[in-house]
Length: 293
Image (cartoon, rainbow, N blue to C red; front, side, top):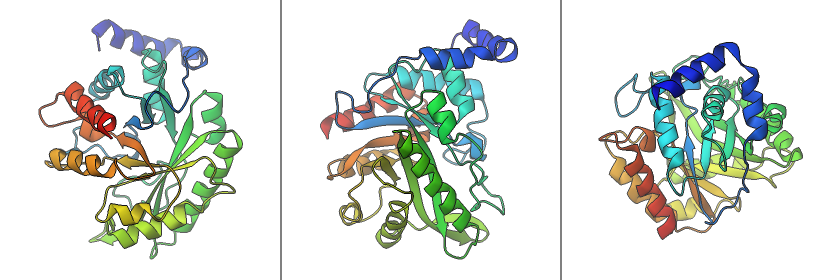
């Protein structure tokens, strides 16, 4: 990002807040389905939940300038379809003119702050369906962590179900990210066994008054063929924090992208903070997987 663009962004944030709505109103939109049958969405909603770590570096995402620079590079690469983020990031990208002809998904429940005692009470603190529609976005994403031993799970399920219903009523995608979760030594951990993912999918796809516009965002787990048989909904594969195993992540995506029902990737840190720091090369490698699939 050029220094003049950064300074202009700071000035508009301070003195011209109306330009956010103006940029949203004039953004060129595109259909959900592009020239490919599979989508590549770049995820950038981690900071709003206090999740700033990448590959063992707990503050890797502390710089908003660096994050925006990486997002602008990623979104400009051929084959990238869009972005998933909270309002603060999306509005910065709108002001930078980076979202024309892109799919834009608003992240909705960020109340389950990473490491908090209330992490499973994942309240809707970001976008709601009205604001997503009003800003001309293309859908909303909800995180649905199901912890059988934590009573806060039921309020998260209710909130996710309401979001699915309200997005569908407005003709918008509801992207649901389910996990079968618990605590280990006080920290939230996801059970990534096939059986656990099938349980999570079974609950998640039943949320809301209709599943007509529901998409699932799922990790690649063992026996992915069996996991995919548990749903008829479109599935996007998530990236997560690969640590030092970015190469293994690409291999797992390559195999899973061949499965029926898998419609693409939603990846954040693996592409935005790759080993070696070459965002363009990391994005291009992901695009090549989609094209091969």
